[in-house]
Length: 110
Image 1 (cartoon, rainbow, N blue to C red):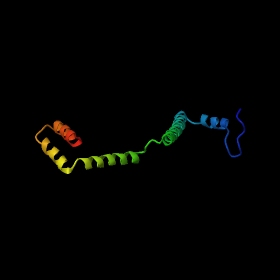
Image 2 (tube, rainbow, N blue to C red; image 1 turned 135 degrees about the vertical axis):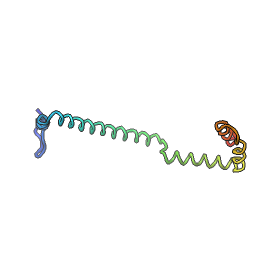
Image 3 (cartoon, rainbow, N blue to C red; image 1 turned 90 degrees about the horizontal axis):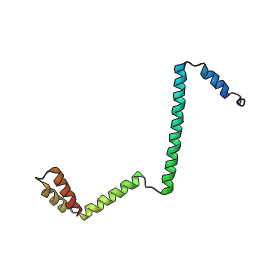
Image 4 (cartoon, rainbow, N blue to C red; image 1 turned 180 degrees about the horizontal axis):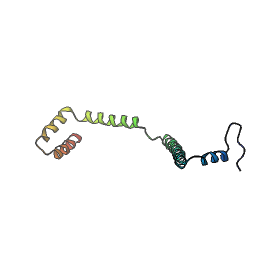
């Protein structure tokens, strides 16, 4: 037998009796709701654990990654002048798109 509940609270046995009075569809609905809450709590706990590990490892967040990408792009733009980019685009005209794109990528990056 479960300990007697605090005043104003139901004991586990009282809850079981109340659940037993529900119709089978209502019992199934209650089971699904309890299961959903259980999975939701597990997901929240797992999310917090993952976040704590990321913070402990110093893994960059999305803003930091995007800042790095922008810095690399800016550096590439400064290395390849607009004239070089325009020349590469002009050279690719008349070629199949895949070849032109590949050539442009190779010419701009070199």
